[in-house]
Length: 589
Image (cartoon, rainbow, N blue to C red; front, top):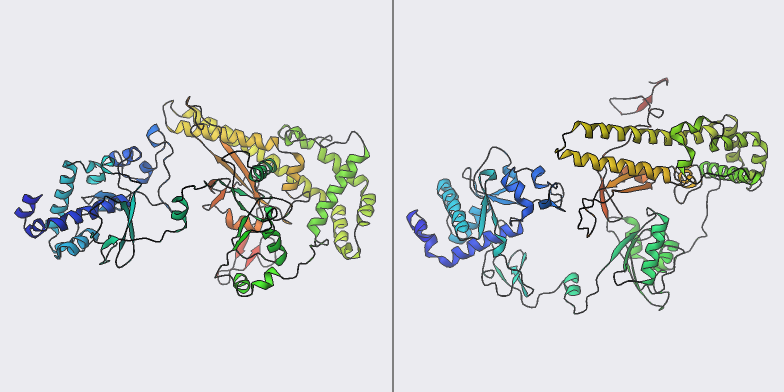
């Protein structure tokens, strides 16, 4: 570019070849850090349409397993040298529209001590000529979208395992480059408005991960989560794999909730950590007691959140947590929901014991809910309700004998619910809701099939509709295959594990375009995930638009099913001044 520089009033740039080389090197490093490196994943984005839709396109072999860009995930910033009417924010625009400096003019000024942004036309011509020259020598290549976008040619990126740390003298930002890289040192810092210079850091202090991965024998981490959201069979399989290590790739790190707090003995566990300070000494002792059971010693880490008064109190007075009083576990027996669930369980047990012909179906499928099963006298729930009504007094008196006087007021309210039949209505309501859900999935499946029929055979959307049909069928089959007892437990008819309130269920479908290591293009069945959270947790974690992480997946909550809302919708008015609510058919409405 020497002749161009001299002929366009930029001789002072041509005279300082060393500074010019570092300037170009800095621009290339900026491109690398911003993801402006050519890759087949970017073809559609660079050559057809400069939009996030084209960037995230996944419907051909080029873009298989391409990550989703946008939102919280930064998308690659390619270099643009022309302003367009739209989508300029998708590019790292190197030229100027008016006399307002950008990072490229600022970097130029720091090298050549000249405010080139005062001459917008000159700088824009210089930048365009620079990238044309870089393209000619093969360092970058150009695609048409956005008036021309540039990326680094990956053939000119060399990866080395011999690395040195290049740190800025002012802001301490760091570049990791190959040891034979001779241009990184003395390059000006890439951070905007920082006046520092990069130089090699001698004997840099390695962070934890660098220390781990630089060891000669570095154990690989195989991590999994252990929560009550996992199905029992999967959770037990995970515990066995963690305890016995039958394979070289067996799980060696567990991220656990309180499900691992009690009743699980993992003999050779020697390190554990609490993400925050447990609520009580009993919880603390149970959790730290998981480690060191075989050797007698273990490393225990406990993190305290500076914004939590509870954590900071025990951070200052740790002995009160480690040596605090351990209270005997208890339960509020007078809680009406707990008693109601136990009473229904007692009624079912008594009904089954009364005759050898009384048995519970094993699965939801056996109830034949979509075939009018609920309306027949032989429907198992109708038979149980009829039994309770016929033996109401006996069941009440025998159940009451199990409790002390403190629970009598709650038991009286339970008896009242038998008299006004709200107890039975609550049971029927859950099974009607389940029936509506099955009908809703059936209607959704028919709707997808009709959409598929209306599409042309070569329409790309047809494949997406087929995935939705598969997921709908899988979800329907999962519901039908669910254990009847498990269903009654999850919906709050029978005693459940943790929640005294009815849970909120998350239903998710995870699609895979190809089976792992499958070379015959067999498409994997969608994985259907169903899990239940308490209402207090669900209203925060499962709101539409939120992301929920479970079982190695990050699930985005897309909406709330409303097919079973017709009996639960309430019309309200709210005050325009204080936002007080009033229901329809009340005096203040």
